[in-house]
Length: 373
Ligand SMILES: Cc1ncc(COP(=O)(O)O)c(C=O)c1O
Image (cartoon, rainbow, N blue to C red; front, side):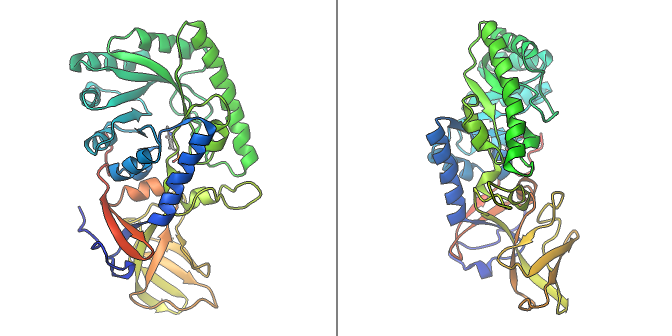
C-alpha cells in the first residue's frame, strides 16, 4: 500500500504525486444526472463497481437512488458488503467451489445475485447456497452481440432459467443482457443499431421464458455509452453503467448527438503528476507513467491545456510535448492527466483524493483494488 498522498484541507498543490484525484463537483454532477435519468425513465439503476472499486462511492450512488451495485469478481462483492452495501449482483459467471462458498457466505449479510451461462455453474452455486443456508438470485446471461459470455437467446436461455428456478438455494430473477462492444462504437446511430439488435435477442428470450411459465423480473445491462437507449427501450429495466461517474478519454471520443465528444457526463477523475524534468522548452517529463494510469485505450489528455500533449509513457514517466506557443512548464509544476481508461487506472491506486475547488475534502480507500478472484 502507498502512503496517504494528502491531508484533508490541504490545497491541491500540496498533494503528493502521483495521486488519483476525484473532482467532487463533477463527480456529484455525474452521480445525480444518471440517477435522475433512471428515475425519469422508470428503470432501476445498479451502477457497476468495477469502475470505482470503492464502497464510499457505492454508498453515495445508493443514496442518490441506485438499488445496489454490480461487480465482476467475488473479491469486489466482499469489499462492497464489508463496506456496507446490502445488494450486490456479480454480473459475471463464477466457477469453482472456493469462490462460490465465499459468495454464498455474503448471502447472510446482503442480497446476492449471480449470472449463469451453463448448467454446471447452476449446480455448483446451488450446492454452495444450500451449504450456507442462503438464497442466491440467478440471472441468465444471454449473448446479445459482444461475443463474450452468455447462452444463445430464446430456448437455450429459457432452459437454463428453468434449471435455476428448480435449483435449491437459487431463485431465478431475470436476464443479463449487456452489449459491451456497443458502448464504445463511434456515433450515436452505430450504438442505436447495435442495441436494436440486442433488443431482438431480449424479446425472443422473454417470449421463451414466459412460454416456460417463468417470470422474468429483471432485464439488466447497459453501460455509459448506451444507457439512454436501453433505458428508454421498454425492455431493459436495470442499468449497470459504471464509467459515467468518472469518464475517461475513451468515452469522450465516442461522440454524442451532433458532437465529436460524448458530453453526457463530466471528467471527474484525474491523475495528478509533477513535472520532474524539463530537458528542453518543448518537452517536459512528469512523474506519472504506467504505474499510475493505464494506456491500453490511449494516452491520457492534459486537463485544461490543449497546447500540451502526452506523447509517450513508460513505467514511471510521462512525456509531454508543448506546442510552439504553450506557456512553459517548470520543475515542480503540477499537471492533471485525464486517463484513457478509468477502471484499470483506479486499480493502480490505494486512495482517492477527493477535491472540491482546489482543496482536499476527503480521502476514500479503494478497498476492492486488485480484487481479481
Ligand atoms: C457486465 C457489465 N455491465 C456494465 C458495465 C459498465 O460499463 P461502463 O463502465 O462502460 O459504463 C460493464 C463494463 O465492462 C460490464 O462488464
